[in-house]
Image 1 (tube, rainbow, N blue to C red):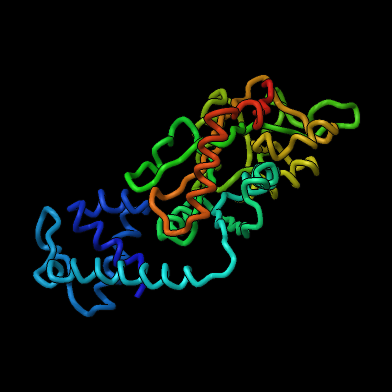
Image 2 (image 1 turned 60 degrees about the vertical axis):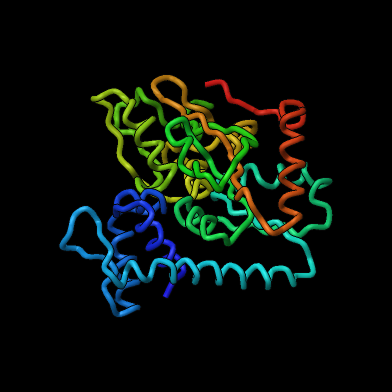
Length: 312
C-alpha cells in the first residue's frame, strides 16, 4: 500500500475521469491507471466499473471513498504529531538540480538573518519526482524553474508561490586556442549537441523552444545525454559539444573565458525561479519565513536580489 494510491483514488472520485484526475495528480494517465489498479490489487476488490462510461465507481468503490479520506487524514495527523516532537526547528526545501547549485546557496546565505538557527534541509531531483514528494507533504517548499509556457504547472487552491529570481537557458561552447567558439551554427559539419533527455524538464524546453527554431536544413547530432546541467557543463568545458545551460550555472566560466555564449542563429529561454509552499502548515517557522519573504520581496526585491541577465 502506498499513500499516493489513496490520494489518486480520492482524486478520481472528485474529478470523475482518469484523464482529469491524472492531470490533477501530475502524472500521465497510463501511470495513474496503473496506480489505481495497484490499489485494487492490494485491496483485492474492484473499485472502478470499467464496463461503464463515463468513469463509474463500483459499490465497494463508493463505500471506500470516505475510508480512503480517513486513512489519508489519519496518516498526516500522526506525522504532524511526530513532527511536533522535534526539538530543532527546520525548513525543508525540494529543488531542481540546477537552481539547487546555481541559485540556492547564495540565496539562502543572503537570507541567513531570517533563518537564524533553523535547520535548512535541501533535497534535489527531477521536477516530476520533486513535485510528487512536495504534493505528498514531505517538505515545506519547492524551488523550481518556470518558463512562459508552464506558469500554472503547480497552480492549485492549496498552494501559493512567489518569484525569487530569474535565469536563462543559453547556448555555450568551449573556445579554441585562438579564442573562437569550437562550434557554431555556420559549421560545415553537423553540430555536436550535449542534450538533456526529452522527458526531462529542461530537455523539453530546449527541444521545443531552441532546437525546433533552428533552420530546417540545420544538422546536429546528439553526442552526450545527461539529465544534470552540471554534467553537460563539464562536457562542454572539455569541448565535447554545444549545451544549453542556465546562465547562473556558468557565470564564472564565461568570465574566465572557458566558455562563450553562442549568438547568431541560436535561441534562448527565459526562466523564472519560483518558490512554492502550501497555504496551511503546522510549522510556525515555515509561516514566519514565508512572511519575511513576502515583505522582503514586495519592498525591495530589485535592490537586494539584483537579477543578472546575459545579453544574447
